[in-house]
Image (cartoon, rainbow, N blue to C red):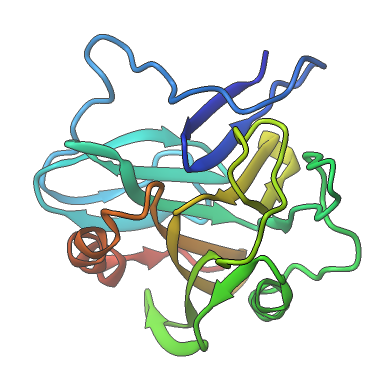
Length: 225
């Protein structure tokens, strides 16, 4: 069975390297102690590339640090957190919701911005040019359009829009239900594309997440080649 990290309003599915049944599971059961807290201060990702330095206060945990996906979550509410993707691909828009790339979409930040803005199932704010880690980035807020009804078999009937795919870690990222995201998309010299996602899976914590997550995003620094 696929391992899923999800709530009723989001589908992040980390798929196994071998064939298995697919679908959205309930929120992944944490270990008895849960992810270890990240001490307040400045840290650098252990596995995620490009190596990324970030500064946090108290109240954050780091459930995942892999070469292509990094996650910081609020210790008091794992439904709200910061997600970094390295070189994500556009996820297939086929109605069957396969974990596969969407053909014909480029890999640069500009390519992904244009593609996300074209998706009929999403509300996307006007892009804003900002700076993240000293590099130019595009900022957009994203949520499901109120008229969108298409769903995936694993989403318990919630309206769902496929977003990102990463074959190297078999990662699929679907937006669903009341989920709200603030995306920062940028090209890191010599390192490819990075997407920073402030994501409130249930949507109701989005404002608080922006308040707590904005300083972390502001602190980001990426190793360049």
